[in-house]
Length: 145
Length: 106
Image (cartoon, rainbow over the protein chains, first blue to last red):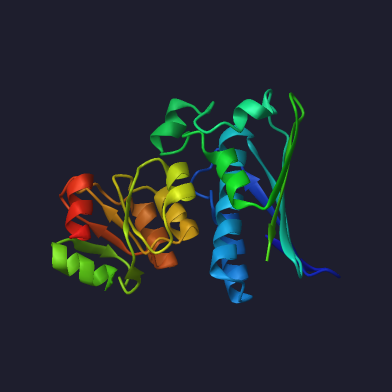
């Protein structure tokens, strides 16, 4: 994790390794701790933690890893997840609850319920997906403080 | 309202990890982690058979009061280490998920 103090607040950068379930959740856990220390309301902390963790897990499961940038500003927390994975052929389908392309191995770990993207949309206040097959995916989320 | 430790003592569950001092409000049962992430209420006792590392991450991020491992399912060594580091309370019981939940709710 790298931390930068910017004009608008605090900025964090994480590199998320692919297929490493032992480290999945480290980035989200770090941001959760930071928000708690900053005295952010618990319900807002939970929204950020859940939406970011789902994105982090998606990077691990589907994209071979990626990067997460988080900015904590005076009004909102902005989260940008970037990967160079296979991309999402049908974003609308991927947003449906229960739709998943996770492997049996991943499902055995308790993932692959097809709730990742729907949870990210539910717990963030704004979300945008920009995905190109064969190039990668960028998901941006905003949670207001 | 009881603490996780009080719930364990009352119901004959084992305190496997953590101080058990958080107050428990409600019980939630599920094994699929994304569903737990999206739907487990904060401060609830989460009953599951999943005792792996990712369960601990979900418990932290969804902010549940404790995990209750049903069916005497094991807590993996790395999960135990993470739970201790994050002060996540884990209770264990030989009861199946439904019976563990019913007992806590009584």
